[in-house]
Image (cartoon, rainbow, N blue to C red; front, side, top):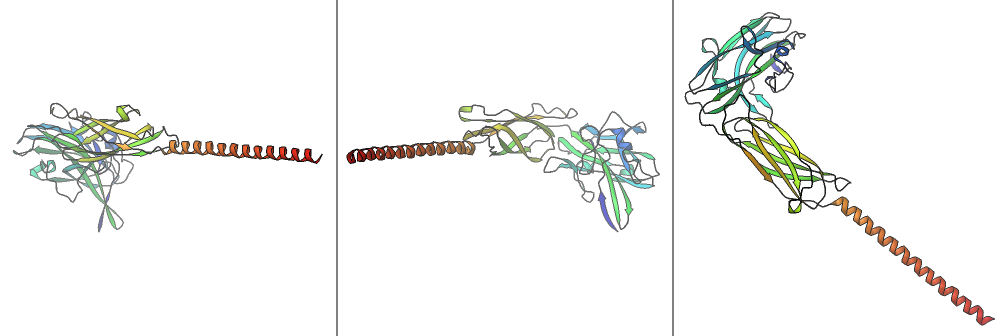
Amino acid sequence: MMIHRYIRPLGLVATGALLTIGLTVGTGAVQAMSASAAESDGIAGAPSADGGVDQSRSRYSYQMDPGQAVSDEYLVQNTGTTTQSVTVYATDAFNTDDGVFSLLDGGVSPVDVGRWVTFASGADQITATLEPGASKVIPFTVTTPADARPGDHAGGIIASALSPSGQISLDRRVAIRLYVRVKGELQAGLTISSIASSYQAELNPFSGKTELHVTLNNTGNVALGATTVSRVRGIFGIPVSGTSREEIPEMLPGSTRTLTMTVRGVGSWVYLNPQVNLAATIDTEAINPGVLPTASRETDLIVVPWGAVIILSLAVLIYFIVRFTRSRSAQRAAAWNEYTEAEARRQAREE
């Protein structure tokens, strides 16, 4: 029987904290536990406290020393109408090329924080059979290795349920983010490793737009977001545009992201100097790494003001057409005057 992974939105707690694999969806821990109740094979999960949903948390986040162990609970629920076998396990997280927080595929073994999570009897996963509407609290332990690298380690706790559908099996999975922030020497590093730019002219030579193509690198060991401000200056540093502000979602340590930022209302001033300034931001639950990094990059751009060139060319063409027309008219008038004068003289001689 072929296995097909079915990804179904089940709710995201706060800023993307509860998600389906590879997707960002929904809001609210309570919604997460009831979002799929109308489906026959729905599952849901959330942080647990006192046997129920922990409304104070949207994810798991721990500040730990190397070699430390922390115990916690995960609540999984069968929101469907059929009995289901649900497997709970942990894995590692990464950023996709477009910056989305994602988790390793089920067939890929974790090498970082996903390996630090164990369930009953030290197992790396646990399976529970749940009747329709039933829920179960799954205890687990996070143990950091004695040589754990300082900084942020990101992953997720996943609940997975296989169900047959004709000739295939559907794998329904939901996940909650997991952050382990290991104490030690923290390095907050976020750089702009490259910048390029392009210009798109409009018919109005003063309403074009400049696109900045920027590559960001998280070179430290702390997950960071950023606020960027882009602008364009002309010769002598004179501003020729307004500013464009953008909030960059969290980038995990070691991740790279390429962005396109657009600054509108830029005139075709021949020489343009696009610039971007970056200020890093950090999650409120993170360990304070000290001063957060800032970065600036700029590039030069030569723009042919085609709109102005066309308008000027038309003006010059009209000028010469008018001048030529007037010259031809003057020549015809002079020739007519000469003709009439000659005709008058001829008639005078004949008389």
